[in-house]
Image 1 (cartoon, rainbow, N blue to C red):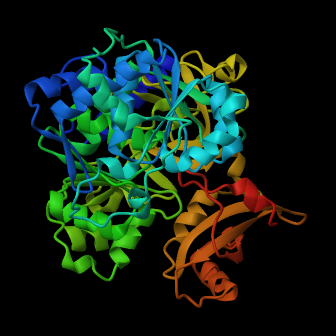
Image 2: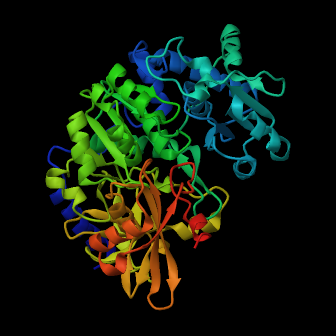
Length: 566
């Protein structure tokens, strides 16, 4: 069949599988306009409504709007013009929210950098993006100084995380928020400059952003080479909120979000910077993950909505003080399967502890603004967890998928494994400065993801892994993601990563790098015996135990580094 007939068939399957009561169209509560306009509108309608809680300090919508206006004026005074890239090099903090909306309000482009970056990585991204103004955490100034001259930075703004915390915090405060303020004369003090602008009544730039204007360069994780900047527009941000929130979170202005995902990462950008402002709701922001701080925050602020890594879920479930906290406010908690995978046991234990059902959040990539599917409403009888590898549900409203043959590009029918391709209003507009890579990835309006997947005969999408990670063992397909999910069910295993090693007799053989839970005395031999009892013979991996897995800043395993250990 041709593509139109193929997609018509998939749409019929998706309609039949659609959960009852779930919206079928994107929803724009304040209309189709840039997200910074949403902030202005909520500040006008409800200026005293809490926008952000940070270790005892609360910013309301009126304050966040005014401070981001001042930030926009500050950036303009430094020569930042519409279209210029502004690099942001800091962990989660209120200042990041102020800077983010200040950048958007003056028409510039948000270019976040991982705060874990070393000088070589920071320098690469600054040069690639062409950013000449950088805003950073003052403790990171030594890294900035190593590359400042070679990158042509004309202005550096720095801020201390503790400057916007409360005098008394109802939740544990991490060390980085307690770090002393840095004093030096080679940067501008961001917090000191904002009131100065207010005193001289410097107006915010009168820039009017359009939905098609570039809003951000979100860099890919760099697991397959140097990171590439994904060009995303104001419209991409808005559609992501309007399509995902109604079907995956069912949130409105009464919600209380909590985010600890790093906001330089596009999933953290969605969860912390975009979703709360889109809905006009409150956000509880953690500078980093800490199970005790998370539990304390849920209880104190009556958190209703949150995204979690499955690894974080496990830490809460295993925490000796978990039973002493009140989690009854939780309504929607989505899980992201990276190292640990969501299992029926995690779901059962989570429901017993909190009263709410844990579900896989979505499939997505930096290239698509990362919220392309949803699974909420598909948890009856653990439907979503009875299929391995990862079940990622149905496309969000307005997004389409197809599965193609990697070599020929031919359409493959439901049930067949092939390359997952996605078409979405939030699709990147290209890779920054890389026309050839853009043309290779974007073909006739579709992103060719390089991911191996299957659309089932019921219309559900199952993610099998990166194509290059799939192993062929005695002619049989073995998916590392499936083995990692199975290994995650062993009580002694804290995390795992599976790669392939050439084998003269079998073609390839799987090798599992294992990290044990603290206090575990399990041996490689014992784990291998468990695998032989739990898996088909051709899937059983060789076991190697490590102290830790090499990780990217966004929580993914650097598998190319594991290859050096073979």
